[in-house]
Length: 113
Image 1 (cartoon, rainbow, N blue to C red):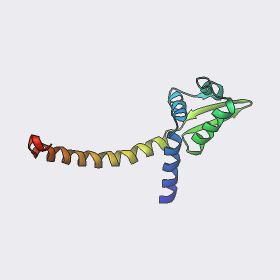
Image 2 (cartoon, rainbow, N blue to C red):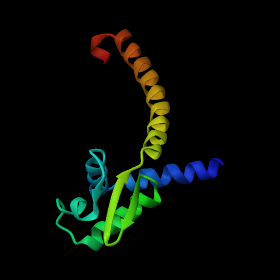
Image 3 (cartoon, rainbow, N blue to C red):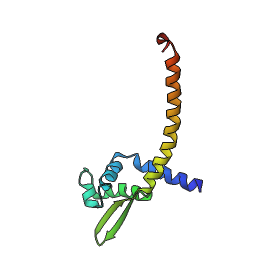
Image 4 (cartoon, helix red, strand yellow):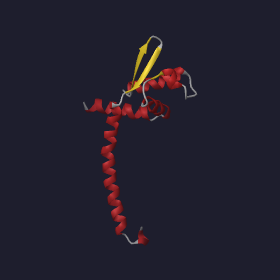
């Protein structure tokens, strides 16, 4: 179970690491769209956009439905919630550490800061 969760989280962050894929997700957050609509803002071919979409699909971040030649895509939010929860645990850790550092610096004389 832990390995599967880790693999899913790795796939999510790997998919999010690319600005084109993040832009696609931003567009899908507004609603369902066809592959052609998703490709429009990018200076790349439909097959290149489809490669990005496959990465997003494998990560579970989007779902594609085919109706004849039309491919409609929609956002899947569960992996994003899992990634946000993982980040949140570390945000709390680092805030506590940084608060401690700030308190320490406040106790130092100004010439030692």
